[in-house]
Image 1 (cartoon, rainbow, N blue to C red):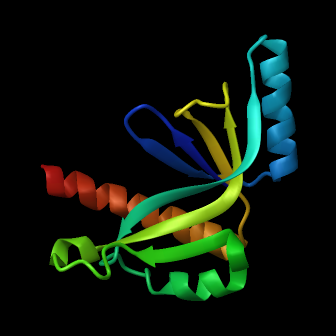
Image 2: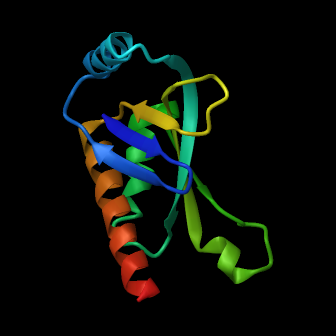
Image 3: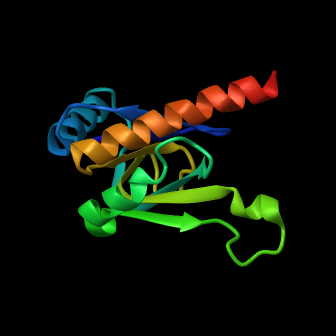
Length: 136
């Protein structure tokens, strides 16, 4: 399972080896015990990766294996600016969990094949490392 935690300024991706049902049940129980609200709904989440990352071409194969749960879109494919074509949007089908219905911060979880989850997590980690090196 992939877990994307969205905060005010960023998001963080984790690869968890737990079933979606168990994880959501634990999360719900935690909210009940701490008297916090919980909002859960089916949803879609997206994030960007550089098209220059190693192994990105593997995602096309993983897309075919995962059906509608994983989609890939080259950003700005019709835009004239070259910089607009340097990103790929990864869209996932899954479950949005937040404190309120209108919350912009929360957790998104998605279940894909183990191979797809592992590759997406590795690419995200690689993107973070490259972004850190670029900003120095």
